[in-house]
Length: 355
Ligand code: NAP
Ligand code: ZN
Image (cartoon, rainbow, N blue to C red; front, side, top):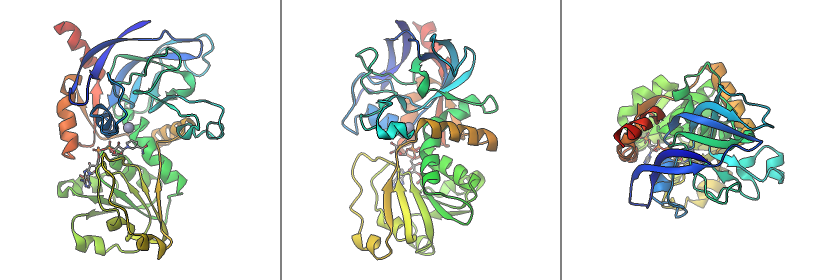
């Protein structure tokens, strides 16, 4: 077993603190990665505070992992020691159901294994995520991250990037489309960059007046303050597609009425409390669609990483030491993220010095 260190929550109200644990030795198909950077997703916060009522404590969160390969199993074909590699939200799936066969492991009919907070088949223990110094993952769930991309700024692509890329691709966003992105946080700012790169006319909806200039810089063509009814009314019946990334419960009707006939709003935010039920009339009178989308498959995640390398797209990040993670969560709750916290995992060794 590999002695590992990281940060874990021991209970919903404990916050995150140093934690020592063991990982499996790499098997024949496994890749061992020294973690260099890990992005901080709002899902990490939802999980460690048990807002989704599914936490298996202790939780070591983190599913936006970029690091360097330090060992490979004897049957590993796609990775070599020394390469930069990424791990996202999944580390396993059944690999034989209809969804897995189609490369949609996130919809595995037998349930995929999350990078953290899930039972681990290989050990009978549980998975621990990327707020740690290393990880061991089956090569089928490891991604190639181009050396062209800054590895810290690339780490959020592994969740925020793919979670926005996948629905934009599925609903065929491109030139001539008017696309709304709701919320300028980790997911939202990637949605703006990606939809812009795909050639759409991008309108960013925000509750934070102060984010307007940033949104335009990131690639939005227009910015709407969603709390201002007049600004909202100016866009009635006009959107082909809206990607809603908001992490809190809110009125969906305010956005549904902005879709044109047969337009779709896709939800990716998973708030602790449910949204008020939307009006059926707003859906049926214009045959509008309300949909959801979960991260993306492994092949599509690689496609997204390659798209980002080609277009020079990474996340706008604030690099933090792991010792600052609890304060970062408080700022995330205030929508005060510009636009993704990323943990510099070198900071973990400060614990060793202190110990
Ligand atoms: P985040 O960085 O905290 O961004 C969320 C944004 O939502 C905020 O920056 C804010 O943007 C807006 N917002 C927050 N509270 C709001 C409120 N009460 N009303 C309206 N807008 C509000 O979070 P994230 O990491 O992007 O994650 C967003 C959500 O997606 C989370 O629920 C997360 O769990 C979920 N998620 C889902 C998937 C999936 O596969 N479906 C994957 C990853 C994450 P403004 O300041 O611009 O208003
Ligand atoms: Zn995430």
